[in-house]
Image 1 (cartoon, rainbow, N blue to C red):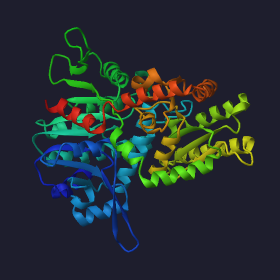
Image 2 (cartoon, helix red, strand yellow):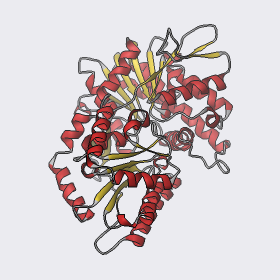
Image 3 (cartoon, rainbow, N blue to C red):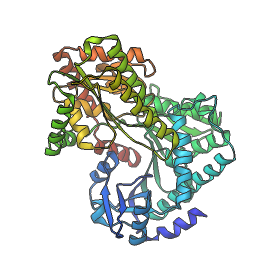
Image 4 (spheres, rainbow, N blue to C red):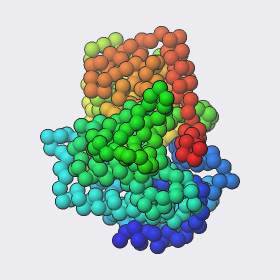
Length: 502
């Protein structure tokens, strides 16, 4: 079995960790050079900041999967416990799960089924189709989750805290509970949670397995109350009356929990909205490489009096980039006064290009952008400046130049771009925000609301944002920035840890 193989290899991890984090992607990745040399690249984000925040005095380990040949070679050389110099001093255990198992679990189930369900992306007349191929991929997903559960069970000290991350590892809490009932386990969902009617598309046994897997945790945590409630309703409708949902009341204002009928261990459902790291963003956005990219972008924008609409996204289907471009096209068509006076900086960084539907979507983004430039562009004005190569410094430069930020996802667990742009924008920015983004709960009062499917409404919102008086824009942007940074990544992580161990 895959789990047995991984368990045997996990002996390189010294047992006894007090805090463990489990995620598909770890805080470091490796590339393998032609000469056999390994180059390590550290990642960023809330988990990396959070684990660093607990301090070196805490015995912690991060368990992740090897994602490429460089990672697999690092596992072979280091025995799975990676070099501290590569990981910033963190103990990182990388699991060399067979590539075919990982591909089936990650691309076949996590990204092509669970992601599509929670983001409601299926074209239902044709998909999904749950057949023999699906069942083979589901078996790989089970083996993949079991490999993580084995490694965590071996590495954890008695009563340790384990924080399991996201839809890739939804079965881990239940599997780990079977192996180590002494552990305190939390699961965090970084995506939305599907409404029960959509979740019901999954095969009945798979739905139960997913929910019971997550209910193996002491705490099931979500980015917003909306996603937490959707999970609770799915538990009620899928697991039946034997599982009861306790909702907040006068005596328990903060409790939402799922527990088997007749008592037993409850799973508390928590809400922890991830915020932007304001201090880091402000400092990083003032470095020389960002200044250089601002100069290059200003040259591409052209006239200094031109307004700038910014979007920064991966070409993920749920991000709704194509409809955003169509709304911009509608703005130029319906309001010719904006021609030559506004530029759309659209950064669309390719994502999941090993899946055909993502490659097609990425190509469509480029096609529509090119069509807008061909139809409306002039010798001295390019309406859309499209960049497809990921460049963090250039993204920050665009943030600083933004008069308007366009964030219009079909559905999004949170969306940090909506929170980051107001923090960095030099003159403050207006935020055009989809009501289907998790960030809407925190930012909606000062954003311009759009239905992500309504191109005409989005075009009108862009016009309203572009014509917003400077004082109002600055005031809104300041309030947006304050709300966006209320729960920075380190505190977000520590709040979950305290809730689990307190």
